[in-house]
Length: 166
Length: 101
Image 1 (cartoon, rainbow over the protein chains, first blue to last red):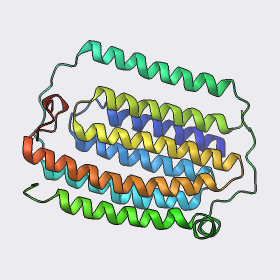
Image 2 (cartoon, rainbow over the protein chains, first blue to last red):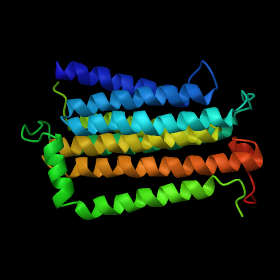
Image 3 (cartoon, helix red, strand yellow):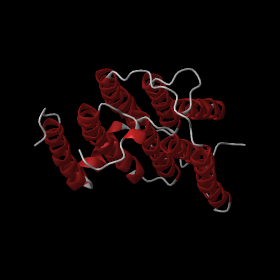
């Protein structure tokens, strides 16, 4: 049962990911943003299959619920007119496909040639309590630094959205 | 065949390459940024898979921090894009060829 669910969620993730970058229905970035939300949702499903329950919830709440909403705010704020179809340079597209295909070949080849663990250890449960314990004991310094980072991001955004950037 | 670590890593690698393809091919700034988020999510999936199969919670802590830093990065990046759009009235990469504001 878990195997079938993995194949379903994996296929959905890859299909929605492909539709983010190359959907044939509209050139509107809102469509890509919607498909990215669905990709993040399917990834949360994959996290649940990997027993990372807290991360699945955080992914849906923070990534799909805050980050993508921010993206959609900005897309609607900019109010881009439907961009006219510019000609895609065939040479650029071909070079891109070759490079990405090469990187993918290197990834897959190194995966096939390395001895990876096949059975999941049954002891690891990524619930809230074990993760919280790690965050507050062993990783408390990065935790505090990340809070300072968020403060820096807030100050930076307020500064960047002034009308006059002098 | 039971689903092992390599299955999750193949999904992660394919998702990463899809994001990379989006960054290379698409010309709209916002879609390029969204493909960048796709690459970050592929890395998250790889980290959680490794954490589960090696019985180590460090990978999930790392993903927690990656999600937080990605949220901060998205806010700053979108503020930059909005400021750029105000100046140049375009969100198309081919029009943004000079470094002058």
